[in-house]
Length: 208
Image (cartoon, rainbow, N blue to C red; front, side, top):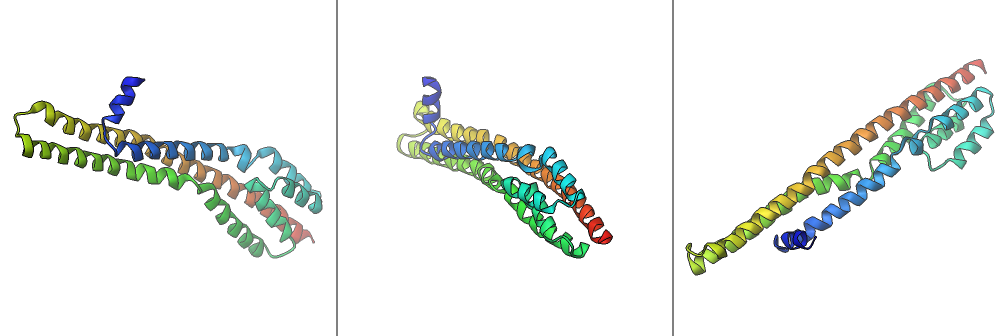
């Protein structure tokens, strides 16, 4: 462990922001993985119960259940639909689309942090590379090219920061893509749930 710490420390001051960015990316990714669980966004059991309440015209109970589950995106969508029942299908659909866009944006929250880290980590690694090469050329200017040991320090620092930047960026890119894919999947689930509720409420409006 001590050898690893010394190895990373030899990368110079640029290793500090690279290390901090990796911690930020990991924290953001973990937070979003927990938040994007299907049971937290579109729980099947809750949707089935809400659909049954709507079929039985128990709209007040449906709204109460939605408000008890207000932390769940699907519940907010169903509540908005039930509150606009009795209106034209196009009006209910427009309201659902408005809420859906808001919920989709909420699902994406935090993913941009991972994306930013994926973008800037290689740049910080490149900055460290340039810093190390500048030190190398300063040694050459002052001591000449014959002092190999002195040159090795700057070159080593340049390569370590490059490696560190890429080591943070590659997992961050994968994590960012995964989060966006997860958001897309959950958004489709929300759309399916919205359409089912819309059909139920449209049937109610027609029968009324």
